[in-house]
Image 1 (tube, helix red, strand yellow):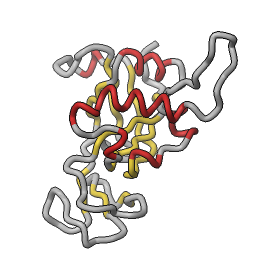
Image 2 (cartoon, one colour):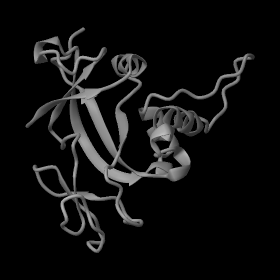
Image 3 (cartoon, rainbow, N blue to C red):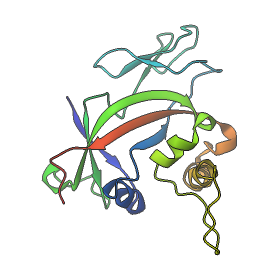
Image 4 (cartoon, helix red, strand yellow):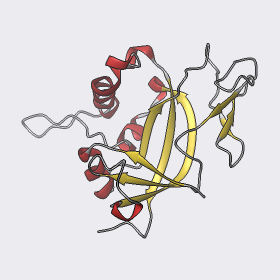
Length: 172
């Protein structure tokens, strides 16, 4: 088991603390050439993923393999409220255990995944709630963070989907 930091905005840390966020998506770098089809499969504890179609190149030069820099199931991530990249482990406020990791195209996100990302449905002034809008909210949030880097919603990049849960040693 490895322990590493992962940065979240303060709004996302609040969503984690409130139990509204249990997933995060991060861009796969470098992006695979072409479409790898089905989601990648987790292969071993070295954070190596193998695509179903081994014809595609990867960052290591071995066909079909990508290194996941965010960890593997069982690893722990510390979520920090501020730029705590240089803070000691003792200063971590939240510890997250990775329960699943997969790779998919960004636009494959489902409504329940957008909910797990901490996105809220659109609520109108009269209190009416639009169903099926968490995905739209997620797309707007994604673009506000990633579009300027060339990985916007319309680019539909491959993303790491990291599912996690807060561990019992999380600080109140």
